[in-house]
Image 1: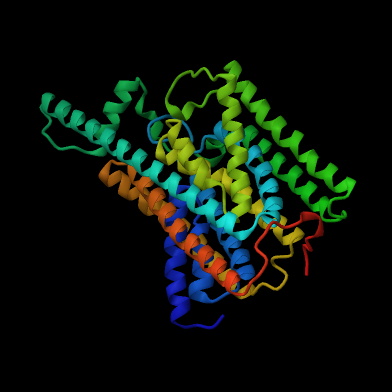
Image 2: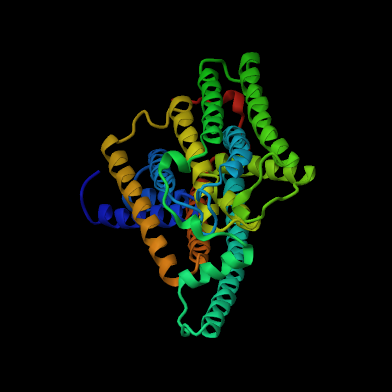
Length: 410
């Protein structure tokens, strides 16, 4: 890595990608890989490796930032640990499946899947942002009307808007109080998330010492299913019985149907599978899904990033150990871009919170998410199409691969 205009432009793009990606809850991997290949000039293998480093660094920094933050309107942490515990185990199981399928599926199929999924999710996120913007506008008009009725003038501010929201939901304004990290973290749920992460990672490490497609190989693979399904089922059962609630929605109690919980778990597997297939974090599905459940944008972003921090670090270590992606990595380049991504994630979180406080519009997060998804779709889709054209010109094989004959380390 030599200093020059490419490094400067790459740093700016990486900084913006990490800032926007972590604010939106998707990590920014869809911007990192094209930046590292098209601008910096890394080969595809090194670009994917460094991208995973950047995603892990940015997501981890964002999680540590959010550990002290509170819910925008409720007396709760901004991270919904119950929601994360429902989705994260299935997300990691899906990643294991997706990484295996990545070897089997041809590039043209992965590129098509990427373009379709990112385009559909970005459109849905945009309309969700528009709806949220309209709701915030109505809330501000109501706050302005109430302030004039009370004889306090017609100025509208975020504090007044929050008071109106609290009054409608009968919630006390003590939720704005600052608390310590120890009091702000749900340690039991966080411990369960770590337990799933450690067990599945240990199985992946053990699988590396077996013969591909042997009996032991498949036994170790299948052992991941009861761990992930068991943990998510445990959380789903608690939600179904009312022992736990998704309190960040603002509802005192929500009755969850069995079919509904099964669909949510299936969405977690789908998010992880697509993430493993495309080499990205699962946040680009989880964040819009959380928004669709009625979770506030700040909470949806923070919870998605928590789940993605586990999955990204798992993805990072799994491919480092199993596929040898990091054997020939430029350590200086990796450290530099991880530092850029980490700093950008913290700066992005701080600035966006300032903007939300000034405008009184949390929908800003949704529009940032939409922008990140659109840019990722264009960049990744463009790179994928260019690679397909090159392989067609070189008359390379573009069919399905065989997992059992794939050499994981060259």
